[in-house]
Image 1 (cartoon, helix red, strand yellow):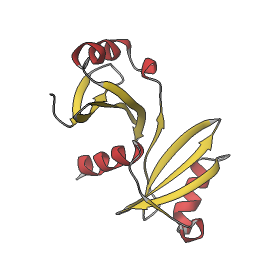
Image 2 (cartoon, one colour):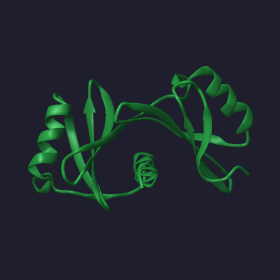
Image 3 (cartoon, rainbow, N blue to C red):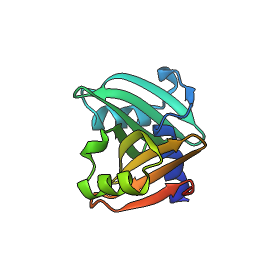
Length: 146
């Protein structure tokens, strides 16, 4: 279940659509937890998908997304990163093993203190997501190698 929820969060963080939510309809506990954890955040936009809420906002001149359960518990957060910010051995692996693909997006995802990167790749007829550890280990997260 945890991996399924993580997959859903990664897909949402990578830009899939969600439903806009009027900020006045965000529960007190969710909004309070957000404000405490991200003091100084601006431009908060809330969206909902299934059983969690996503808030996109700006903090310290960076665009960030945080994910909360409907009960107000933070489930994780992400931000876009440049591919060159990944561990060097991961960059080399991606360029060599996935040379037929174009990198379309890379995000840093922090879930309960465990940080990983997710790299979205695509070519003319296929899309896939790679998971990259802080140590540079690259594995297929979603999709199939073609």
